[in-house]
Length: 312
Image 1 (tube, rainbow, N blue to C red):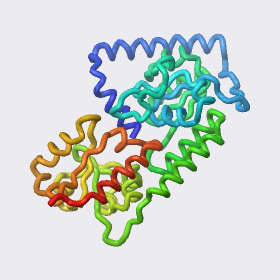
Image 2 (cartoon, rainbow, N blue to C red):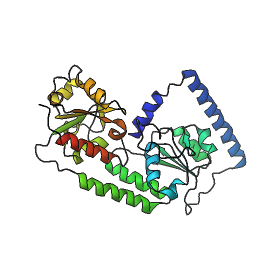
Image 3 (cartoon, one colour):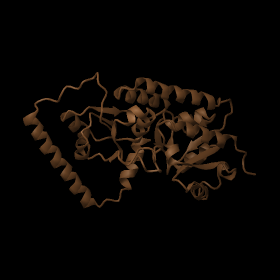
Image 4 (cartoon, one colour):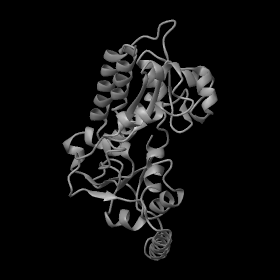
């Protein structure tokens, strides 16, 4: 999901601890100076003209990068900044879409303010301090609260489209999503195979994008069947006890075959029926963790796993 992708990317950025502290101190200093200046020159935030759509839009999360692109050329020309992860093939389904002239934006307040946005789209995981500061300086912020499932995607598309003045285009995205979902959905019959996602001990239960995709692909989600909701940590012993008929793990581009082999060879996995039958599969993280339109790509990938014959 975007929140998990964002946290993982920040862990991987490799910046020295001291550099991070200096950057944080600089950002806090900027915020203090800006706030003092605003308190002297502008006692209250400017009134936002709700009749005119925003002309300078900044996105801080991958989902918004993807939705804004899908909303069409008229919206794209008004986007002045997209998230810093938009070009990372490990997480983004919008790689190579946005031109280089569109700024790649970090969550640093001075970078955002310098773009002079009249709308910032953020996630619930975006720091409260940043969101509060943007509000104080008069920059409207749309906060995407949930990235949990298919219903959240429909709601998020509608919210973003309305905020940028493109409700008709947003409605079409949702209609296209539902039309394709209906075309690829597989009924879940009695005795349907069970499936589980596994990410270093974390499984996806009910109320997750994986659960919705697995159900649409005709599977019973083993974690949901066991009563889990959301992303939960379990032991390997619990997974062995569930003995799902298909196991899904995530991988980065170009590594999926190796990841599947490596995971299946680990102690505890190699004797599981799913592994012996060749039903442990790796799917690229940008698809497996998508919270956007590409969740349907996950449905199709899981359908292929359901229809593949077991290894002799």
